Image (cartoon, rainbow over all chains, first blue to last red; front, top):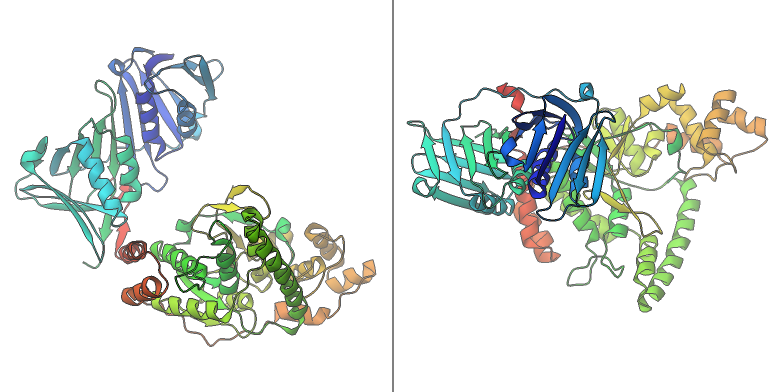
Amino acid sequence: MFKALINGDVIKNALMGVSILSNDVKMNFNDEGIYIKAVDDANVCMVSLNLKKDDFDYFDASSSSIGLNIKTAYDLLKDAKKGEPIEIELLEKDSKIKFSMGNLSYSLVLLNIDAIKKEPKTPKIDLPVEAVINGEDFKKAVKAAEKISDYIIFNADNEGLKISSKGNMRDMFLSIPKEELMKYSIKEGNSVRSMFSLEYVSEIAKVFTNQEDVELHIGNDFPILMKSNIAKHEGFIEYLLAPRVEEGY
Amino acid sequence: MSRNISPILVKKEVSFEDLANKKLAIDAYNTLYQFISIIRQKNGTSLINSKGNITSHLSGVFYRTSNMLKKNIKPVYVFDGEPPQLKFDTIDKRKIIREEAFEKYIIARENKDFENAIKYAQMSTRLNHKIIEETVILLKYLGIPSVFAPSEGESQAAFMTIKGDVDIVASQDYDSLLFGSTQLVRNLAVGKKRKLPNKKEYVDITPELYILNEILEKHEIDREALVDIAILVGTDYNEGIRNIGPKKALKLIKKYGSIEKVLAAIGKEIENLDDIKNIFLHPNVTEEYRLVWYKPDKEKIIEFLCNEHDFSRERVIKTLDEINLSKTDQQRTLGEWF
C-alpha cells in the first residue's frame, strides 16, 4: 500500500535525479519514506534517493517494492505546474502507479521487479576530505569547467578546496579557502586530488539546487560522494561517482 | 551505390563507445559527399570562408574525426582511385542528375524558396580536386592516415578488414559487405538526428553494425551468393532484374544455387556478368599502405582551420583539448571499490 501527496517540484527533481543514470529501477516504500538505489549501465555512478515521510504533505505506506520505469514517470510529471502538489498512489490490483496533478492523472504500468538489475551494494570507502559548499558555487564551478574540457578536478588540502579543469591552451581554477566553506574537514597530512567526467557531473549539478548546500567527500584518485538535500526536510539525493584516472603522469 | 539489400541484412545498434579501441576504415568519398551535401547554411549554400571557398568538408572531417579520437577510435580514410570501366554508365547518369539539380537550385534560391534550394543543392553535390586535397591536408595535421585505393575505396577498405589491418569499414553504402568487409558500420554522425530526404521530418539515428559472417550464417549462403543476390537486385555496375528485390533474389539464389542458373530459369540476361562478379570478388586493391596514427599537430590545425578557413578559434581549441585529454586518462568503474 502506498499513497502520498508531495510538492510536484520535489518529486520531479527527485525522479530526474535518478533518471539521469538509470531507466528501470526498484522503488522501495516503508512507513518512514521511499528510497531508490541504482547504478548506471557503465557502473560508473551510483545514485541513492531518499525521501522521508516528513517531506510529504501526506504519506501512508506499508513496506513494499515496485519496478518503475523512472524516465517515463519523470516525463509524465513534467506536465505539472510549478509547485503544484502531486498525488501518488499505488494501484496494486492493476499493477500500476497513478500520478494525479490538479484534474489530470496518469497511470503507469509497473515493471516486473525480478527483471530489474539488482540494487548495488554501497562500497565501503574511506574518503579523507569532507567539504560542504554552497549549491550555487558548486553549479558555477561545474559550468566554468564545461567551458574548458570534459572533465573536472577536485583538489583538497589544508588550505581548502580547489576545483579546476585543464586544457592545453587554457585552464579554469576556482579556489575556496576552508574559512569560506560551510564545513571542511581533512584527515591530518592529507592532500587529495581526483578527476571526474563532466558527462556525469554536469547532469548531477542540474539536480542540485542553488539553495541547498552540496556535501562533497573526496579522496585521492577515488570515487567522490556528492550529496544534497532536495526536499523540505531530510530528503536527499547522493551520488557516488568513479574517477577518471590519468595515465603516464 | 548498389540498390538497397538491407532487408536481408542483419544489423545491431551500437554506440560510439562500443567502437572504442577499434580501427575504422572510412569510405572517404562517401563520407565527404555526405558532409558537402548536408553541412549547409539555411539558404542551402555550403559553409564558406571569407574567400568564398567551401568549408563544409573540413568542418565535417574535423569534428567527426575528433569525436572518434575522443572515444579512442582509430580512423583511417580510404580514398577512391579510378572507377572500374563498368561504372561509367552510373557516373554519367549521376552527372546529368547533378547538373539538372544545380539549375533548379539556382532558380529556387533566386525565388527565396529555401526548402527546395537545400534539396536541390544536396542533389547537385559533387566533390572536386580541391575538396579532396584539403581533406588530405587536414587529416595529415590530425595525424590520421589516408589510403589511396587503386580503384573503389570501399573494396580497398574491405580488403584491409580481410587482412586484419582494420576492424570495421565505415560507410553509408552496403557495398563493402559485397567486397568482403568483415564488419560494416553505418550512421556514424556526431549529431543524432538526420533529415529524411525530400521530407521535413527528422529521424533519430544510431550507428548500425553489420557483421558479414552473421549475415551469411543466417541465410546459409557464402559471399559469392550474396554478390549474386546484389547483382540480381542491381549494383553500380548493372541495372538489376525488374521486380526482383533482395528477398526474392535470396530465395532464387538458394533455390537454383547461382545467378547463372537463376537467369537461365527465368529467361533473363545480365550484360558483363562475369566482369561484375569479378569486381566484387577479385577487386583491384593494393597492399601498399601504412597505418600509423600520430598526435594531432595543434598549431598547424589552428593555422589551417582558423586562419585560412575562418573556423571559430575557440571551438577548434576546445575540441583539440578534448582529444588530447581522452588519450591520457581512463574512466574507472565503481566495481573496483566494491
